[in-house]
Image (cartoon, rainbow, N blue to C red; front, side, top):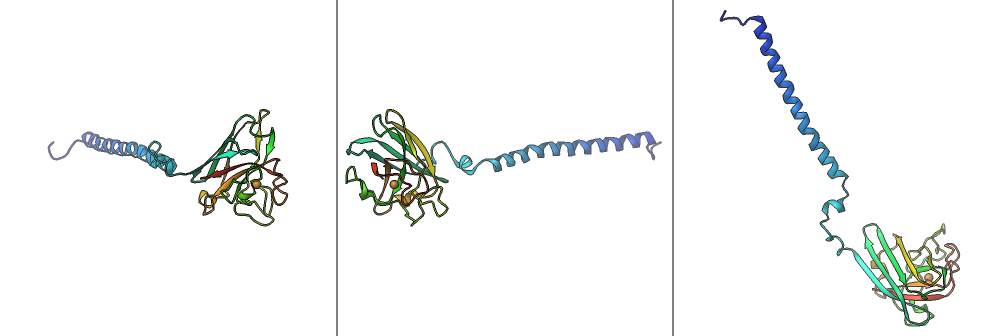
Length: 207
Ligand SMILES: [Cu+2]
C-alpha cells in the first residue's frame, strides 16, 4: 500500500496541480490587463495635458495686445493675440459706434505705428508682404498677415475671434513692431494688393 499511490489518488493530485497552475496564469492575465490599459491611456493623453498642472502652461505662451483707434484717433476697442503651439488665437472687441455696420477686412500690418490718425499708412503693408500673394483664396498666397473678415453689428460693435498659423508673434513684433489694421470694406481674399478692402479705418499697435 505504501509504495504506490492508488491510481485515483494520483489522478486527484495531478488535477490539483493543474488547477493551481491554471489559477496562477488567470491571475497574471488579470493583473496584466489593467497595466496595459493604463499605459494606453497615458499614451492617448496629449502631452500638454499630461505635463500641464493648472494654468502653468499659460504664462509661457506669447501674448500681444493693443488698443484700436478709430478714424478720429479715439480708442474704439482692443485686440488680444495669444500664441499657442499651433498658431495665434486673435480676439477683437469694439465698442458700440466703433465701426460702420457690416463686413470689414482685418490684416496684420508690418510696422507698429498708428501715429498718422485716420490715414494709418505709417503701419506699412502687410507683414511678410508677397508680391501678388495677397488673399486667403489666392493660389499664389496667402500673405502671413491675411485674416478672415470681421463683421460689425448694427450698433457698430464687434466681437470677433479668429485663428492664424500663417505667422508667428515674434515676426509680428519684430524691430519695427506690428499693427492690426481694419479696412473700410470687405476683403475678397483674391484681388491685389489688399483684396479691394479700401481705406484704413482703425489701427492698433500690438505689443
Ligand atoms: Cu490691410
